[in-house]
Structures are given as structure tokens and as C-alpha cells.
Image (cartoon, rainbow, N blue to C red; front, side, top):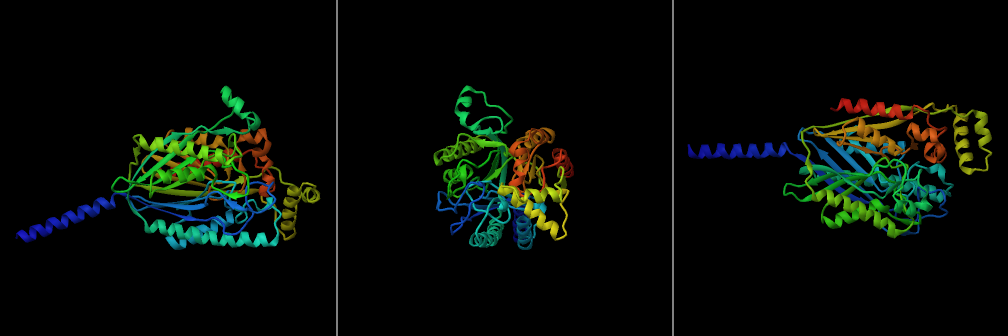
Length: 453
């Protein structure tokens, strides 16, 4: 009888232990180098005249797989790249679905937007006139990159373990609105305290600790271009330095950066490795300060993921006659874009009236709403969405899933300039966005956010 009671007791203890583990969140993290092994053309700047010829830091692909107590999963892939295009993103998502059985709405392909990484896929490919050997290198690298992403994601799955998730929001102030402040005058106006224009200095932080309360991972974001450096050396720019510093501070942990809505935000001043390290240190210090203070434990047992592709309209499309005229332009970017669309018209295609723009919303537990937007999104979007959704509990990521162009707010669109429409030339899109661009995207976010509450 005594043995029977002991057996029942141990059985109950085992069930309780299993039940407790099942009720905890789980997380798996991994990272893998994606630095090109051969001299390749670099992305981000049209002014470059040769391939990369050195390396300051490695470029990384990092993965964080989250699994809720209810069994739902979501995967963040962070890439030290300027962006990924829609075709490449869909190829990666298909491979991840086949390997990990995750749907596209469960996967966020985040890019740091470093301008010291390689040209990849078709992202910004129209910006460059490349020799055949460089085209082949890009295609080969793009295929290799996909395999590396699947590899790091699968490793993150194998590393799943019970985890304690908590979050907070820090601050970093080096981002400057580049539309309202001249770079040449930045030290003077910063010293005077007269910087102009909207900014988003929040640093969202998600801390992941194991069952022994050791930090094993930290995800953090910031709304600022990774454009400190513009040379010919591979480098993760300030986000890469920030991640590296945090991983030194917490041995064994993996730090993952995601870019916020920083399309009109620059780290100023810039242009030197010392400044890239300085901003990386400031961002890492912000995360460190946040981690040392009491964080908010993630409440709830659900992880809800939804996404949609919404038709964002272009403004007035060019006529065939206008394209033929532009194809003769002395501006090689205008000529290349015009010829691209003339070739498509010759094949019987039509100029598209809209673009299938990706919007994604995750609900982490009962608290956090995480919005993911494609393209280079200006700061107005994050400021508006954080105010309109759940103030203090909404995070907004840009540069994810498809970096097809700049995404201006209506204000920026009306003001014009590079972010307002000029950059569309380098992305090869047929026209600037229509005036509905902001409302179409915001309304899609509202609907998705409502569906996961």
C-alpha cells in the first residue's frame, strides 16, 4: 500500500512538473555568419564604384523562435542587410514553411538596413550597373543566404527551452530627423538644443531568460538609418556594434536588432568607424540600462499572428510616350527604370496601379502589440500607431518582409523630397505613391490589431 501511494505521489509530481513546463513560454535562439566570402558589390549607396574590399565586422543572420504556453509559434529572423525584396522574401518563407511548418504570418524577416552589406536578390538592383561576374556573385550569394537562413532558423527550433519573457522601453537620442536638420550644421544645432522635426527615440526591449534566470537573448529596436559608414568594408554599422557589445556583456546570450520607422532619421554626425562604435555603445547602453531596471513580465499564454497584403495605390502612372522619353534621359537611373517598364509593356504586361504591401501584427501575451511594416517607413507611422493602438505597449518595426521603397506619410508625401518620392527612382517603381498611402496602411494595421485582441 505504501509503495502504491509513493508511486501515485511520484506520478502526480511528474505530472505537475510537466504541466508547469507546458505552461511556460519557450524560446530558441541561434546565429550564423552571412558575410560574403568573395568581393561583391555593396548595397545602399549609388555612389560606390567597386566591390567591397575589406571587413570591419561580420554580418549575421540571427533567429529567435518564440512558443507560447498555448503552443503558438512566431519566428523573428534578423539580417545584417539593407533589405530583401518581395520575391526573395517569398522564397525564404516557403523554405521556412517546409522546414519548420510555420506560416508566413508567423515569420518576420527583419533587416538592420546596414548600408555596408551586399546587394542581395533584386533589392535596389536597378541602382547599379553591374558586370556579368557581379550578377552571378549576387545570384550565388542570394541562394547561399537562403540556405543559411533556414539553417539558423532550424537551429533556433532545436534550441527551444522554457523561458521567462519580460519587456520594457529604453531611450537613445542619437537619431536626428534628416529632413529638418542639415548634416553640416548638426553639431551647432545639437549644441544649441534646436534640433527640428519628429523623432522616435524609444528602444523597445524584449528580454529572454532561461529557467535559471540567465539572460539568453534580447531583442531590441531603434528608428534610425544604419548609415554611419559608407566605405568598402563589410560592417553591421551601429546596430552590429550594439549587438556585439551586448553579447560581450552577457556571454552566451544572443542580441537581435530590428529597425524601427527610421526612413527619415539619420545618426548624425557620421562617416567614421569611431562614430559607428559610439552610436552602437549608446544603443547598447540604453538596452543595458533597461535590463538593469525592473522589467514587465509578459502576461498571458497566447501568441497571435496575422498578416495581410494590402493594395497601396500609385499616383499618376507614366504613359508609354513618357517612358520612351525617359529612356533617353541622361540620368541613368531614370533611363534604366523607364527601359525596365518599356520591356515589360513589350511583353504584354501593364503598369500596375497598386503594390501588394505587407502588414503584419503579432500579439504577445495580453500586453504587447508588435506591428511589422514593409519598406523604408518614415517616423510618422510609428508615432501615430503607438498613439492610436495601445500607448506604451505597441512596437512598430519597419524594413521587414519586403523593402520595396520608401513609405512616406501624407505629410512627407506632400512635402516631397527624397523620402516623399524621389527615392522611388532607385527602387524602380513606376510612380510615387498616391495620397492614400498612409490611410490605407494604417487602416490595415487597425483591422489586424483588432483581430488579435
